[in-house]
Length: 400
Image (cartoon, rainbow, N blue to C red; front, side):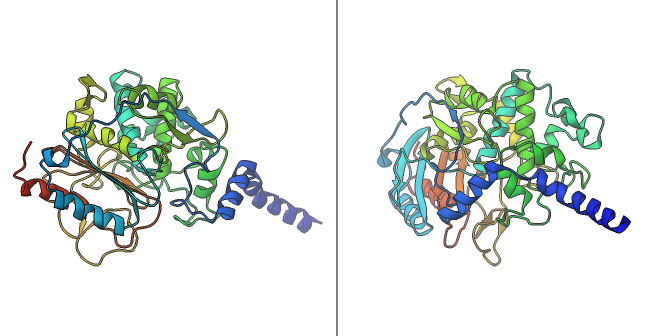
């Protein structure tokens, strides 16, 4: 009898976490994803439900002819040819705040939304800087417990926002060893497709000393988003609309919600147009200004680009400088950018998204490049697009 009671108790304890994971919202999304034959890169932008609307105030893109841009047409065509070969849906180039080149493939056009994936993380870092400027957040060195009160008095509550922005929080991935495997057993998959974006975040355990080791972690970004909402007492999508989307004159966008009235997915998926990301990248060229108005504090953007102690190629939710150069080309698009050669420009800022979604910013030539896709590329090289176009300015004598 005792053995049966013990066995029943153990079974109940083992089953408890599984029962806690029951989630009709996840089940609906998971079955829909299977039925569509999708994986994270190929999910259509209209598949997400529910979504939060990010209101914009569209101002049409200002354009300048290629002949007046100071970029060699042959360089732009070479870049476009390679981008097409890499299953791109869009390639756009701006210089001096003017749209110079725009090419679409696979049925896409200027008004076609795409999923920028983790490029969205860089936008979150911009909002943190604005929140500090507006005194909603006291300092980038605030301990997390100031906003995530569930961790008050715990070691993980002492992790700072700066350490989180650096991706050196010392927190576990929360993937239970599944990594990026798309499986219903993976807690991260259940989180991303589930009805409560906070549950996994608040369960994360410390596994290392904060501030020491670079460990790219989607859940850490989501924690920053949660802290920002609590600091401002505003929904993330309303902050994004009021502080960036409307001031930059961008078209309405959308973000996946865990449930109606819930939390948006901040680590990914601002469903938007590639052309709108030119203006976001341009902020690193213009010192945070658009049409004479300061959108993001210039000092904050400069701080975002300072190399972190854990990895010199990463700042605050943005990739900076050269990364892995040469050697055997890795398959697909690796987490850390792979380059066949060093960057030709003295400074390259990269917004980096799953599957090769990219914004490249080269402030010295006032260049911004956006590349979008919904399929894996054949053989990705993060040096090619920025180097071909940057060198194309030299071919034309770097006319301004």
